[in-house]
Amino acid sequence: MKLLVYGAGVCGSLLAARLHEAGHDVSLLARGKRLEALRRHGLQLAEARSPAVRRVPVPVVEHPAGGYDLTAVVVRAHQMDAVLESLADLSGDVLFLLNWAAGAEPLGAAIGPERVLLGFPSAAGTMDGDVIRYRAATLLTRRVPMPVGEPGGLTTPRLERIVRAFRTAGINAKAEPRMDDWLKTHAAFVVPLGQAVIAAGGPSALAADPDAVRGMLRLIRENLTVLPSPPVPRAFAALRTLPEGLLVAVLRRFLRSPTAANSGLGNPSPATEAAELTRVAEQMRSR
Image 1 (cartoon, rainbow, N blue to C red):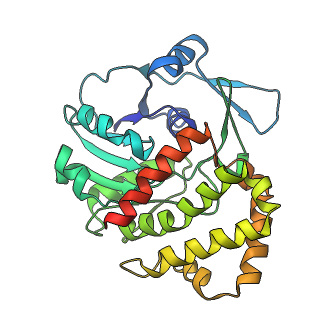
Image 2: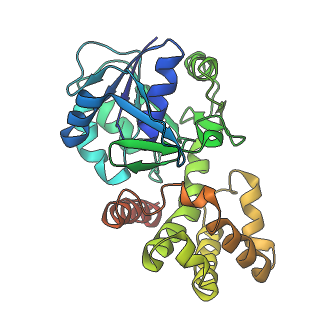
């Protein structure tokens, strides 16, 4: 299977590196300064605070040429309009791995509904100059699987083929029959969380303000209440039922954790993060 990873940020780079190291025919699409850095130094990865940097020789392209069996789009929601224009000229299936609460319809309208698959990346990390720093436990192999699904919920041969290819590369992928509901549930949680983190100045700063965490939790609960379908995963339903004080304590503990620090919250810049959250919030209101 010939693969293109469209987007060379943290998640896209980690995905491309994993697939390349597993022997897949994969290219990474990048633009601007990121493209220049990748051409100059290669794809650079480092674990957490380790001084050791390894380079993964993933082929890098600015303009994709030829056909691909699968293009994995790993960009931010507010960048999608421009991305969809360029995808219309490519062949093959397209797996959208991003925050997205608008469903598959606008994606299919741009590139053809038969080409669309939905998912969400399971990797996380931060950019340190041109080096991507990640925690080993989150390099696409963490306990929470990377969900991938057909818009209609069917388990199709192409979905099975994609999940199998990811798993052979050590990526903990899983076929999710309710992928659209999964993405809406994630948006209901992550939009208030991300906005609160930006307003506070970072995860740890938010954790130090219990009133702000409480306000964030109430917004999350409101969002979950108006979802068109039950939350996916079902565990998110607990955010609507467990005592507020308990949940505030749990959320503050999470915000102080290395997981939150390396989750990408507030990165690569508050302005970029805010633009994405605004787009996803608009999608939630329009559904």
